[in-house]
Amino acid sequence: MRSQKSGVIAIDGGALLFKEDKLPGARLDQEKATARGIVAAYNRMNFTALGIAPQDLAGGLDFLLALQKEANFPWLSANLVNRESGRPYFTPRTMVMAGGLKIGLIGLTGGPEPTGSKAALLPWEKVLPGEIAGFGKEVGMLILLSSLDPASNKKIAAKHPEINLIIQAGTQAGNQPPEQVGNSLLTRVEPRGKYLGIMEIGWDPRTRKWQDRREEKLILDKKSQLDSLAWQIGRYRRMGEPETAFAKQPETLAAYQDLVARHKGLEEEIAVLSAAVKTQGAAGLFDYRFAALGKEVPDDPAVKAIVEETTSEIARLGQMASKAESGKGQGLNPEGYAGNGACQGCHPAESANWRASRHAAAYRTLENKNQQFNGRCLPCHVTGAWGLTDEKVLGLNEEMRGVGCESCHGPAGAHAAGPQGNKPAKAGQNTCLRCHNQEHHDGFNFAKAITSLGCGK
Amino acid sequence: MGKKLVFPLACILALLIVVFAATAGERRELAIVFANDVRGETEPCG
Image (cartoon, rainbow over all chains, first blue to last red; front, side):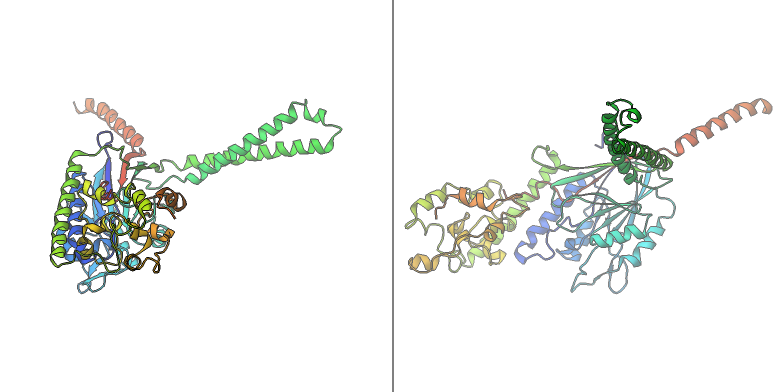
């Protein structure tokens, strides 16, 4: 795109660096390594600006401030301030040139306010007017990177027509096509690298207004109605000149005349709307799409190298943590679990089905990607992880590798010791949804999956 | 000499005014790409 167009900017509304508000201790180092990798990748992709969302503080404010120095692009937040001095920790706003336009960008961080920290969040009403005024009349377009809640973003759009585009972030919601509120377009891309939002804009910096497309849609609707009326009128006229053909059928003639009157009325309405659209002059136009970042989209070799380097670093940190846990003598099964080999003696057919399944191979799929020490991946690729600390998950022994019977049926140590009693439960949908959730398995069908597993009764 | 320059200068000025008026209402083309996260980082596990 950059090779084809003179004006291209790449921005991110925030919630980029960490996926959760709070990070468990064992995974913190891995998540920080991931955050550093993401910043390196964004540098490579020449990002223009980044908003800061509350999730980005999960690694600590000091970490974020230090990491910012590795970025080639500004991190924006006008309202994340030092509690005592009131001064913002990050750049509140910035201006860039693209496509012959001066573009102003402002960042706003959403709640909740970080606890136990020297940072505070100021309300947007207090900071935003000043930041907008700070641009003066220089900017031709104003963009807000906001991790505030959607309702607040709409209030901002209604109150500040000077803001032309609001990139929303900080939620797990999916893609949101641009929605016009006043003179602002609000939009959002689904998080976690699944899509790229692209807006192609034709913008007049003098008027700084979006074309009101509602009138265009209304014209299209009315034209469709007009076509329908014209067809109905045509059916009457095929009988001959209606005034003559239906002279002795007053009701039919009245129906025809009603159609003609409605047709004329619609033509006049369309003419008025069309004139209104023309008078909008050089209002801003846009087109948009959300490009799915599937495997068919080729990798950028440099970014791919960064991802691989980050993956290796995550593996190295996880392996260190795993050895530390193993060294503490934690290489036993979690309490109450019998282990993957315990079921085979009494349930040979089911065990054979399991060994041939993808559940049994779940740990190997991590090994194939050098992710078997990634604390974020492990809980869904081993047995008995739920309820354990991340340290203990990293230290699980080989018996617990893969998604074993006890992942679905629960701990079976008591059942293995006394088979007649303590029968494990059947797997319910909620058990599966812990891992086969929308993020990892969109469209998961429990009924189909449980049948295809072939575990038996 | 000065009088000979008036007419050409006036023509140039008029031409500039016409060009400016024509381009003043032109739309500028811009592409805004907005993303969250790096593909590949989001699917490390399998």
